[in-house]
Amino acid sequence: MTAVETPSGKGAHDENFPVGSFLLPKTLRPQVAAFYAYARAIDDIADNPDLSPEDKIARLDGFDRALLGETDDLAYTKAHRIREKMATTGHVIQHCRDLIVAFKQDAVKSRYDSWGDLMHYCRHSAAPVGRFLVDLHGGPDSAWPASDALCNALQVINHLQDCADDLRTLDRVYLPEDWMAAEGVTIDALRGNAMPPGMVRVKNSCLDGVDRLLDTAEDLMSVLRSRRLAMESAAIYSLARMLSKRLRSGDPLATRIELAKSRAALTATGGVLRELGRRWSAWLGWATPGR
Image (cartoon, rainbow, N blue to C red):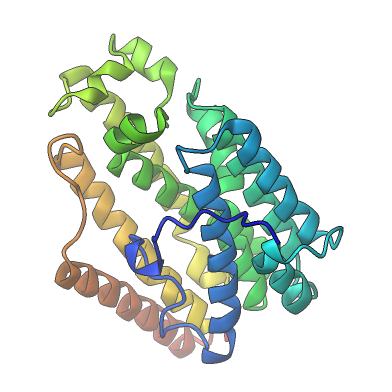
């Protein structure tokens, strides 16, 4: 067995948002952990600066073959585990393959022409995670659009947080080039210690898009069948709203824009409490909330 994975050392504790927290059903947390481990493995390959684009794609293709049962190579154990344990859970295999599409794109594409171009990338890099969770918790598929919106918003938030580091370490820029051109700035503006006014306007245009996505995502909690997933989603939604505000008022080139652990905990708890209040109000009004 030849080593394929290139672990970065990152884990769930490095993420902005909870991954398989105690809010989710205990019986489903192992599946969430397996999916995250798979996603982390292929993401680490795509983000490894020491691998050539051709090598990255070859390794990712191997994971794809493992998902389809076309290889028994133990180097792809994380993909085998998903195929064997979760193949009957909705569209899980397709969601896993969609992630591969995104990470193969990362291997060869480092610039984005427009917001639409970026959203197409997010459809494969971010949305499959939410769709997996929706499916795992009993759906419905009609929750996908709101789930996609939330996940895509999270992806753009992460891109803005890491815009300087992405350029420096991976030569990637996930900001729409047409917006930069309209503001008279280039990617070189991301190499400094502070954003010039034109790049601030590009950042804020991205955050306008994030806020529109979050407006769409606001309906997610009321559509989900799983009460626990709705609470987890409410926590994540609240964190996304808060980070969007922080990014709008801050400069990600000057300092890392993130929430302190205490602030993040309070923000997430507030989201959960609002979701519980919504469900309680729906129950009093004889509406039928999700399970």
